[in-house]
Length: 118
Image: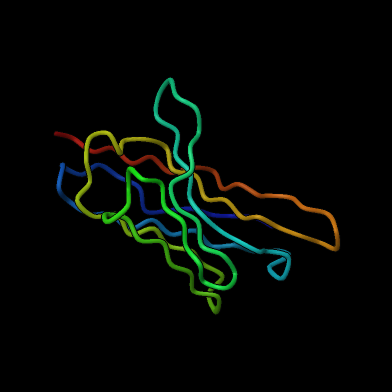
């Protein structure tokens, strides 16, 4: 599975951005897709995940502000980010959890930078 993310940029606090991530390759092996982020000097952390069945999970820090969605027809997952804060500044990575038979794996996109100025 290959992932191509886009949509990052520079915004002011309170504004919105939408990230997109399109998958290609072994699409049928994808179970869940989601977003992680890594701020400078910090570890990569989960932001939001959506399962193949549509269930979602959000980190506490983004609940109520971010929405993850998935368009299976376009093999794309989105992250709508509203009311952005300076602490949301990070490189955002798209992720896909895959399964082929009993073999679990994951794939990562190249990362897209989101910068929120105060």
